[in-house]
Image: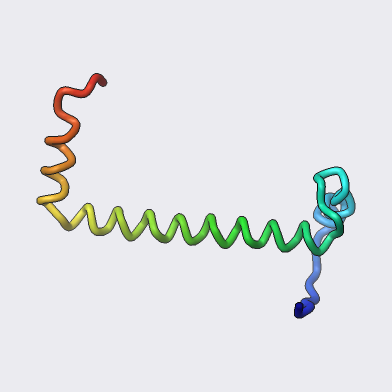
Length: 74
C-alpha cells in the first residue's frame, strides 16, 4: 500500500486520534474509510446529476413518470 503525506487542522487531528473510539484499528484505516465514503458520495452525486440532466431533456420519460404517479396518494 502506498503512503501519502498531508496536513490536517488541529480539530481533525484530535478527531483522528479517537480512531479506537470509532472502531478503527489505526488512524490509516479511519482515513481510508473516510476517503472511500467521500469517493462514493461524490460518485453518487455525479450519477444523480447525470440522471437529472437526462430526465430534463427527455420529455417521453417525463410523461411516463407523470403517468406512473397519477392516482398515487399525495
